[in-house]
Length: 380
Ligand SMILES: Nc1nc2c(ncn2[C@@H]2O[C@H](COP(=O)(O)OP(=O)(O)O)[C@@H](O)[C@H]2O)c(=O)[nH]1
Ligand SMILES: [Mg+2]
Image (cartoon, rainbow, N blue to C red; front, side):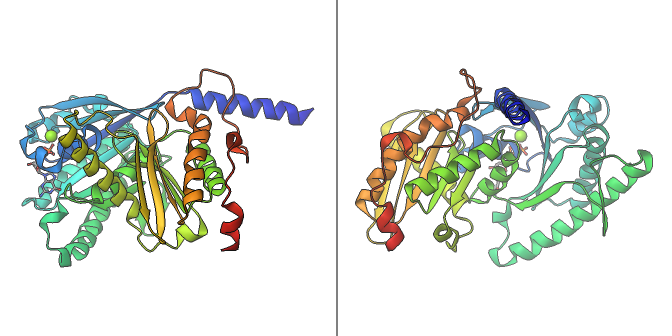
């Protein structure tokens, strides 16, 4: 008795979670010219890095609603960084701007000549955020790192991280004094800390994709379900690695790798793939004359003789999937059929389900296709 009740409660909860359309307010802040609109245009509107030179300065707040997968909408507030605007956000518009924030992305221009002033503004922003959105996550991007000589990048980044962390701790300490014990501002050993992540970024390389994939990762609903389903699929088709990309941004939403795949020494391969696939999409668009936001490819295959093979294919309405496999023609072909057969189990990525019930586990048979190479792979 209790178990069937529990099961129906669990199912109802899972269904409710899947149906919930999530809206997340994302503040994009930092000094004028630091690169906020450039990043947003590259990630979400398929601009090329060089196109961003033509972007005009953002006047006040540029609001955009980015549909990310089926049931997540990012309300991006690209806040013009001129001083007069900044002052306005912190005074008259304070409650309006800083309430209900899910994520703050703060961009520092590494080339800025007035670091002290940048830091002072940052501290004011953190104070306002702490006052109105204590649960918000903070991502600090130390941007335009391409302008720093590569041999000095790490040292300069670390130096900046230390300063930003110290300033944040100071701001939070002041907040504590005025507003005792806010729940999400926990006290750690070295002082008070905020849920904060720092990245070195540039629009000219894949570092941008690493930072943004990390930013959206925690916002994606049903991440647990996605991860479990990807793992089932990966095992069933005998893959080394699977990456799931969001359709427009090509950010990696989720990934899975086998033990063999885990041994891949290239830790930055995910953001590299995002970058490569997006450039490739641009090239397709250039040579076919299709608009850059249009869907130009449905499938891409790459077979590296005896080393490995991979394919990238349109998966659900909102996603592409990349599958990397050990070599072998039969294994490759059956994996492609099985990925196609698995689509119904990932339909929930496209939005709240119309029919009842959360997605079940992928059955071993996967719609009737069997992986003929499975046994041989185990022997090899
Ligand atoms: N070198 C370099 N320039 C960048 C980078 N990101 C943006 N820019 C340039 O910085 C200028 C200002 O960018 P914009 O996005 O308008 O800044 P915003 O005022 O913060 O929105 C543009 O000319 C961009 O091309 C980067 O990573 N490296
Ligand atoms: Mg701008």
